[in-house]
Length: 167
Image (cartoon, rainbow, N blue to C red; front, side, top):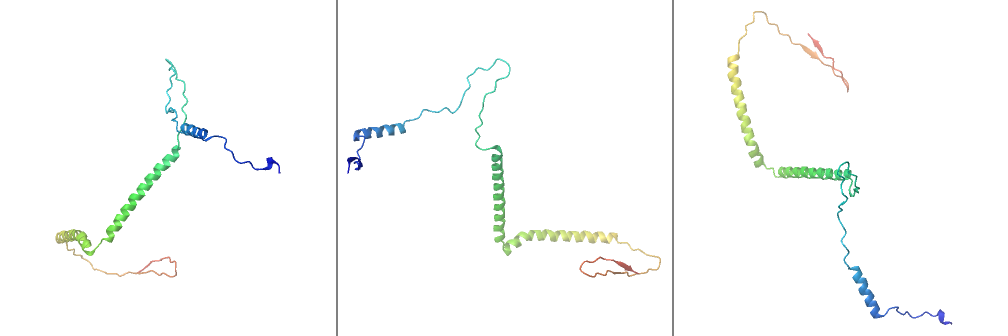
């Protein structure tokens, strides 16, 4: 078999010293501080003494469109409202869960007392007013009492009323 068909043993192309120097150079290049990049721009061209100022390019660098920001703000408002309503409902349910007979009586007793006083005052006013306004009417003719009957036949599921007055 010829020599060129035999696999050659791997031989490094750098010595240990050269490899250490190259590694040191790569690390120093990777961790070298970069020069500061400017974050603002000042236009130093002089302004004209009179007349319109030429326009200056102002690139738009917004990240979020205005409609998306408005939608986000509205969503936050709706979410906060729902949280507030939910907390109110939760508090009301907690109150309903703590209802006992004693608490109901203590809550409604003043209301019932006020209603009783108002009813008593109303009855007293009505009885005082009724004694002064009663008048006796004397009629000078024959009195005739008629009782009228109303027939209202209703047949079927859907009905039309035909009220008839029978004398």
